[in-house]
Length: 72
Image 1: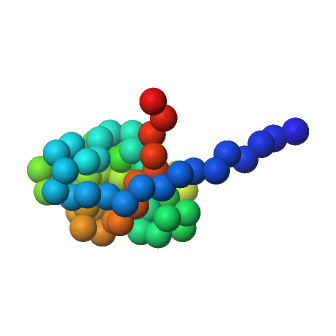
Image 2: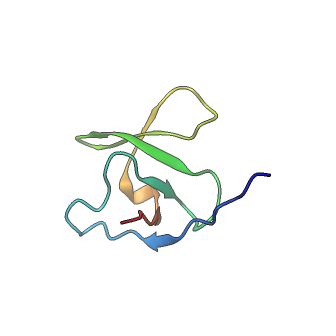
């Protein structure tokens, strides 16, 4: 039997130092799709993947409003 784990979402604070790091999951809408994982930091944005489209893409933090809450 598989279990689905709910994701807690928090509002992004672009002004906060280090608000997004490699490994974070981002979305435009809390719980909405698609959900992107940050693969690398770039000077002008983030390299992202969505798990279904192989090429990574670069995007600005301005495109996202939510980040999955990390445990710990």
